[in-house]
Image (cartoon, rainbow, N blue to C red; front, side, top):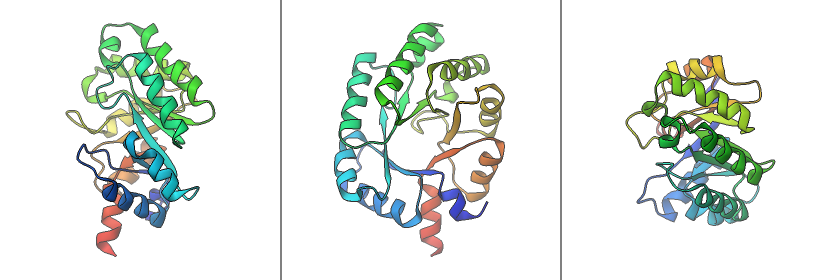
Length: 217
């Protein structure tokens, strides 16, 4: 794949807590310039970003971020609010404690509920692989498949590490045909991006690739 093809599956991301609207606007401009898949931004900026970009770029935002231990009702409210403000894609964080406690019904029902709210909008499920055992990762592949969600996603980028090649390989072996894969966190070069794609990633969450393009330009 050439660099433009890789950029076309990137969620160009800025989720840092101190981010201002002026910084978010730069991310939006860059996403439109380099034709990324979406711009992934905090919920508080979704409405402004949608009004600013219109239909030129998809707006993605995060729900239950970054810890995932909000109640399901809170995540449902966040999702509805984001969609009403113009978000086309939702990246949600699972309740990791519930998964580790083997409360699989809770985890599954929460994902199902958010997918029902999303309807035909894309739902990506962040499982925070760096905090899970291999058994738990495989179980999440099964549960995400059952939930009807569109993507399984490795990481928030706010925990101990991000995406690994091994996790993408594992996902590719265990998710159902209806589930796509998003690698996120720590993707810092086009070579790494191409490797993730070759292993099965359909979407990449990063800001670094656009920065590389701007620096080279």
